[in-house]
Image 1 (tube, protein in one colour):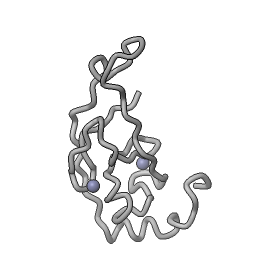
Image 2 (cartoon, protein in one colour):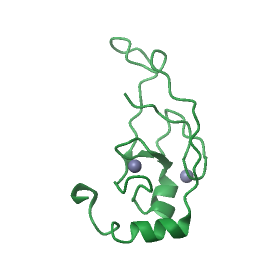
Image 3 (cartoon, helix red, strand yellow):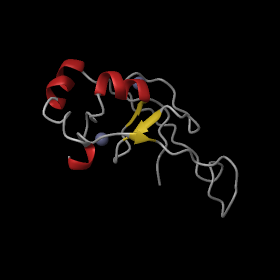
Image 4 (cartoon, protein in one colour):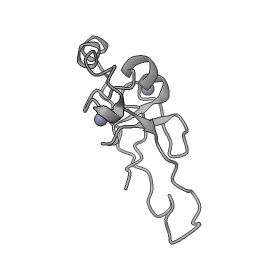
Length: 102
Ligand SMILES: [Zn+2]
Ligand SMILES: [Zn+2]
């Protein structure tokens, strides 16, 4: 189950569970869409993978208790700003490899 982390790891902007700006990698490293585009260029600084929009967990109990009330979003902030220069070097050989081929 996704943790649904509360904020962007780089800029710390709030990413509540209903946010359509949240992006995650396969390890659920979580960033806002703006940072993924402008700073990370779709390369996760922690694993090198690409990002996808984070799905939105239903707030209502449509079926089987599968909703935010039962499985709430994480409140544990992970704020680890990326060093832009270091990321540039890390991402250079990865950036042109499509995520499905990394
Ligand atoms: Zn951000
Ligand atoms: Zn990652």
